[in-house]
Length: 210
Image (cartoon, rainbow, N blue to C red; front, side, top):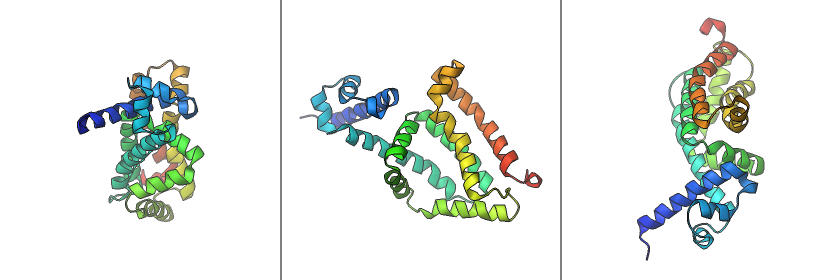
C-alpha cells in the first residue's frame, strides 16, 4: 500500500501539472489525459484522486482563493491610511502573482462562470468579512475629509484594481506584443509597482496630501 507521503506527493504533482495545463490550454481546452501525461501518471490514477476536470479545477481555485485571502486579510485589517493599505496591497499582490502566475486565469474563469460562488469562497476564507466593507467605509471617509479626491468609492476601487490586476491577466498578450520572456515580464511588473503607486497618488489623492 502506498504511504501517506507518497499519496500526498502524487496529489501535489497532479495539482502542479493541472495548473500548467490549465494555464496553457485554458479550462475548455484542458484534457484530463494531458494533465495525466504532464504528471507522469496514467489516467486511471488521475481519476482516483480527482473524479472530473471540474473537481480538479475547483481544488486549484480553492487554493488560489486561500492564497489571495491570506494576502488581503492582514492588510485590510491593519491600522493605517487608505493609501498605506493600497501600497501594501500593490506589493503583496505583485509578489503573490509572480510566485503563483496561474491564479489570474483561474480567477477569471470563476468570475465568468461562477461569480457568486467565487465571491462566497473568498469571503469565507477572509474570516471576518467586515474587513473589506470597513475598507470601503474608510475610503469614503477619507474622501469626505479631503484626504482622497471625491471620485466615489467605486471609481477608486476600479482604478486601483485595473492598474494592478489587468497587466497580469493580459500577460500572454503583452509578452507577445513586446517580445518578452516570462521572467522579463515579471521583472517589469516588479519595477512597475512604483509607477502604479505614483499614478494612484497623483490621480486619487488630493494634492495637498501628496
